[in-house]
Image (cartoon, rainbow, N blue to C red; front, side):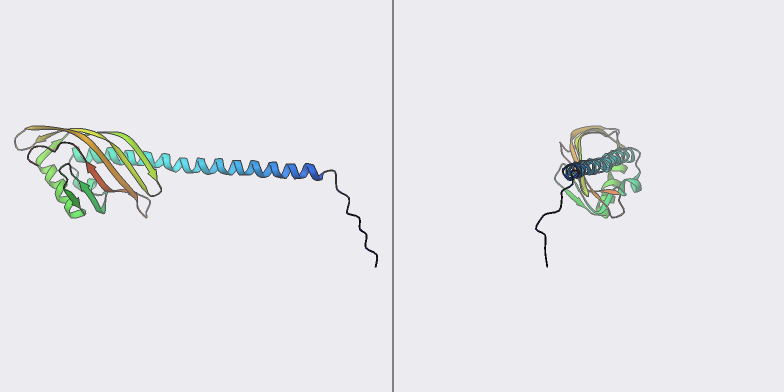
Length: 175
C-alpha cells in the first residue's frame, strides 16, 4: 500500500474565512452583550417608575385616609420602624397603627425621594420628608421633618410590596 505523505493543498480563501469567522463571532458577542444590557435596563427603568407610583399612591392614601389601599402596599410580615424606635410588625399591628394615625390626625406629608435603587427582587427608596399633622380633636398642628427609607420586595406575582419602612427625625410630642 502506498500512502502519500503530501498534505492537501490549502485554499487561498482559508486565511480570509478564518478572519471573517473571528470578526463575526466578535461582532455577535458585542451585539449579544449590548442587547442584554438594554434588556436589563428596561425592566429596571419600569421598576423605578412602579416604585415611584407606589410611593406617590401611599402618600395620597395617607392624606385621604384610605386604610385598605395603604395596607395593600405592605407584605404580611412587613415591619414599620418609628422615629421613637418602636418596631411595629405584621399586618394586624400595621392596621392598628394606620387606623390610629388616620383617626387622630390629618396629614399633609410630602416625600422627597433622593435615591431609588433595585437589585434583583429587592429595591429601596430613600429620602426626606416634611409633614404638618393637624390633630382632628383640637386643630393643633405638629410640624415634623426627617428621613425615610422604604425597602420593597418583589412578590411571586411580580408586584412590589413594602417589607421594611423606617422613619427618622424628631417624633411629635406625646408619642
